[in-house]
Every structure is written in C-alpha cells, then in structure tokens.
Image 1 (tube, helix red, strand yellow):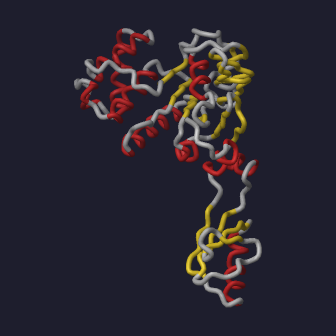
Image 2: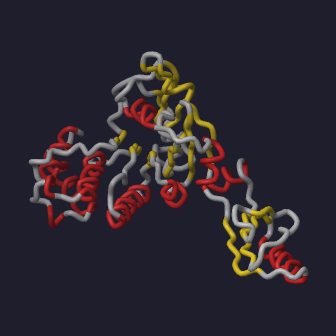
Image 3: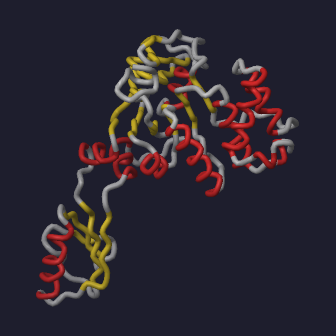
Amino acid sequence: MAPGVPGGPPALLVRGVVKRFGQTLALDGARLELRAGERLALLGPNGAGKTTLVRCLSGRAAPDAGEIEMFGRRLPRTGGRERLGFVPQEIALYPDLTARENLEAFGRFHGLRGARLREAVEWALTWTGLADRAGDLTKTFSGGMRRRVNIACGVLHRPPVLLLDEPTVGVDPQSRERIFAMLEELRDHGTSILLTTHQLDEAEERCDRIVIIDHGRAIAEGTLGELIESTVGVNRRVTLKLAEPGPPPEGFRARDDPREVTGEVEDVALELPGLLTRIRESGGRVSGVEVRAPSLHSVFIHLTGRELRE
C-alpha cells in the first residue's frame, strides 16, 4: 500500500533507541509506533526523554543504538528525512521578514522553487488564517500568530509525517483552537502526526492514541480507554457531601472534612440511587453529589508519580 494509507506499514516505527549525553541516559531502549493517518500524543514528565526522541526521529540527534523506520524503510542515523516535517518548540522565524518572506525562505529550504513554491506559500497563508497579514513583519505578530507561521514553515513541502514539539505552548485559547483546526485538516489529508505536549486535555481530546514515556522508555501506550482500563480502572469516583458528619456508607471513607466521603462505583445508574436511599433511611441527608470519571490525568499520575520534576 502507498505511504499514508491506513493498513500499510507504520508511518514511524521506533525500536530499541538508545541515546546518551555523557553519563546521562536520555533514551533507554525507547519504542514507539505512529500509525499511518493517526494523531499520536507523546507524554512524559520533564526529563523523560520526549524531546530527545523527537530529535532522533527528526535527524537532529543521532541515536547510539536502535532502529527508526518510516513507512517500512529504515532511516539513517541523520539525514534522509525529506518526507518528514518537524516543528520545534522554539519559534524559528526571521523576525525582520514578513510572514510571506519567512514562508518563501523555508519553502526554499525544503527544495521548493517556482510555481510550487508560490502555490505552497499561498496555501500556507490561507491555512493559517494569516493571508491578510502576509506583508507584515513577524516580529509584530502575537505569540499565537508566530506559532501558526512556525508550523506552516515546517509543512510547506506537505510531508506525510509531521513531528510537533509542544505546538501550543504559550498561545491563547483562540490560537490554540486554530492550530488544532490546522492539524485536523492535515490529518484529513492523510498526514500522520506525532506531538509532544504537557497539556493532557490536548492528548485526551485531540489524539487517537497516547504513548507515555518515562526514564527514556515507553511505559504505556494505547487509546485513552485502553490506558484507563489497564491502570486505574474504569470505576467512577463518587464524592458525597453530607449535611451532618456521620459514619460513611460501606465502601466509602471520610476525607479531611468529615462531611465529605468518597468511594468508587462500577455502575453509577445502578448503584447510586440505592446508596442515597440507604443514607436517607439511616437518618442522614446528602447535600451534594460529585461523580468523576477516570481521566488521563489520573493515569499519568498513577504511572509517573506525583513527585515534582524540574
């Protein structure tokens, strides 16, 4: 099958990648599979190895061991990535050039010339929603606008695989929505997208699958549902606010405030009405109920711990 077609070879396949910086082991046998046409989130605490892995994928860093394949073909340690798009976390634009001039410069870096370059620049200006600002210097742009141009500079050659390192860091909510609309359009045209992010809601809502990396290796991967089922479980956490302190119902425990008790239920519709009835029949009264489904946040903390990392 042709590259980019679901069912064909993975867009990217990483096996046993190792990378050291002096005595620091940044990647310790990392593995990852980006399937054709999917959006894959790469998550991990600070220092987990996310950016190092992306740099190895993009050819910015050479792995010490392991293999990286794109659509079934092994990539060299560096170079050979003309069909790969890479957008770094840092804004990489020329501030004293206009948006159009930046796009033209990066288009040439990607080997575009003549009519192909002109068509790509016009497409990018429309795609980013910045056609009316094409002649303005990028140093006059907001952070979100610069971020959108930065992304466009990485995809002018329309690569079938795109790597994004923290694509929405430091942008306002409106720009964030525009960026994901841009990425959705790319995905609809078959682009396979790998993005790193610290925004768990982005991974939860915007990506098809998730890989969590820690200490240089992948420790979990799958859809959100698969990750929840294999780690924290699918039960709902129920918090009851009691009008007066009293003994908690069976299976529940008191929190710091004795009027708040928490527990887990498997079937909210089936179990909660009976629970409330038992409390009322025992002389208690419930003033509030909160039901919380397991989330990516709970999975992430379960796997990587609560310790703050700098």
